[in-house]
Length: 198
Image (tube, rainbow, N blue to C red; front, side, top):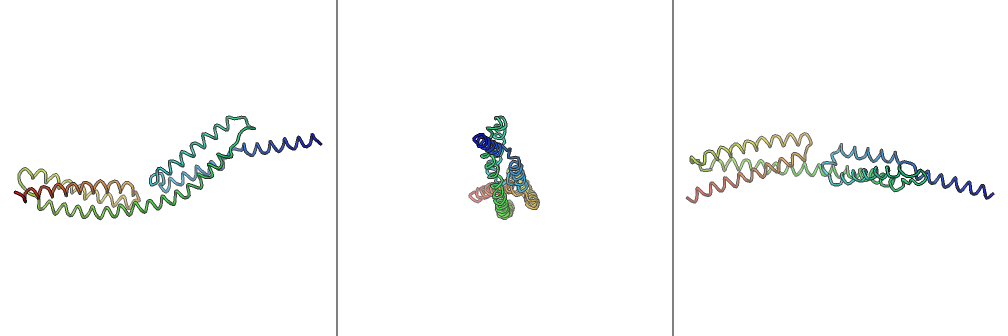
């Protein structure tokens, strides 16, 4: 009887150890697929910090798996790693939703800034028409006119980026163009102010 009890206990320990020792391949594949699906909605661009944290967590789980593999079969334990992988997969779903929300927010910001940029270009053109046209200022005015032409071209590029759904690149370009248009406005306003004081 003692022999049977001992054998039963030994079998139970082996089953428990084997259960903990099973490589969490399904969970690993699910977490990897989840992160790949997050890239499809560009979470890696729109929420880079959060995405990178989950990617680091997956990389760390892979390292932990390799560490467990190097242990003696009976002492392997993947329980904590399995939980980590399930958490990654679950977290990615929320990340994807927030990435889509962030995209909409960026698109709205770009469209609002684009309205301001178009107004600034019109103001710059009006100021350019009022700017002093002396000999020394002719080259400067031509350079400013070229800058305004470049700004108008950038508006077309920004609209194309918005149409293509590349809101982050559009945002960078819109902000840079707006800053340039503001600098032109300041320069022309200063030049016009100097001639008025003469």
